[in-house]
Length: 148
Image (cartoon, rainbow, N blue to C red):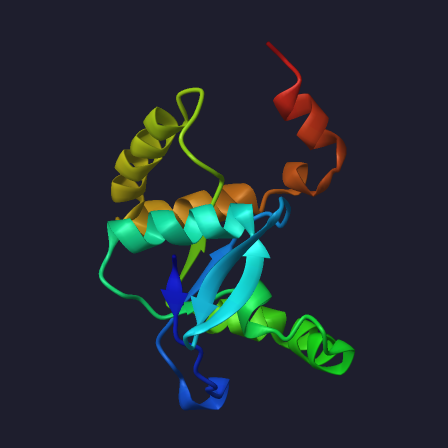
């Protein structure tokens, strides 16, 4: 099974970590946290399995593991810190699920496009384009996504 070590750290100490963004849901599965059984959703277990096989051990912040879900007060405190938690992460890993329906091809294409974004001037121009007034309207989502 997946095995994790849970460490308590302070954001004030600028720890180096990645944050995981994923969709909750699915049945409970057992992983090990500090060598003790810990129940997570099957979607999280699959994400952790995928991350485990693709890299060396990494320091990861995962809400379902790092926040005591049984402690309402802790959950409220952590929710207030979410912006800082994600902002302080060296990267945010987004788990969309296993590859399906050509999603791996889309991701590969996005990785190629991201190499172009590495050019600072292009990145700034894209940011300016995205801040134009047109994007502030809610209807643009429908107008952008619905056409054939």
